[in-house]
Image (cartoon, rainbow, N blue to C red; front, side, top):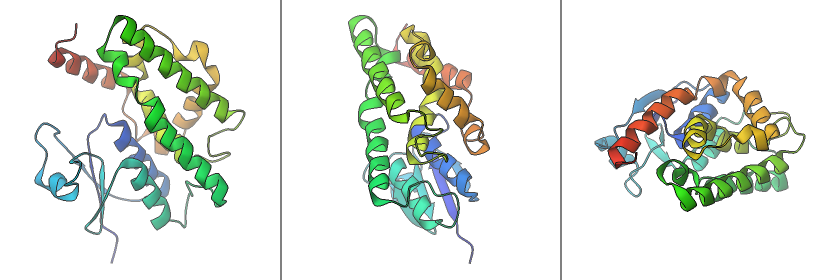
Length: 219
């Protein structure tokens, strides 16, 4: 019997994008179900009763929640093609460390870049660029964080690029001027069909964030 794979997601979600790229890298066919986060479906509430958040990967009726866990699950289940984690245990642990770093250090200041002003925004901008510079240093001269092939850290990080137009517009800065190697890495990732077809256009995301700002009463 063929695998039944369903993804509960919301199109501008950077976390959902990770799962979309992983599925595309593995060539896995799946059913995409767009969620209205203001009116969550009974399926979402059933499949993720603890956090009630997207993305949720449903594989043969079983739910896998949290994007990094879902990506690693995909890699383990469909392990006969396009590995996303190194075979070496130490390298695998390092990849998990940096993927976790993206979530715990890089994502923290992101919202403040487009929801705040003044000193708070400047502090968020510094935190954001410090994280990017550290990641750029970790990338070094490698093609991808995973080496010659795209891997877990690349999948964890590259979706954030779809929000960069908003970050840079509202924060009044340019990432490329300070971190050209980082943007060069982004462009390499975007040349991969699994990435380019899984990520929405930056302008579309920017328009979405404009609408969110209006609803929040931010001028």
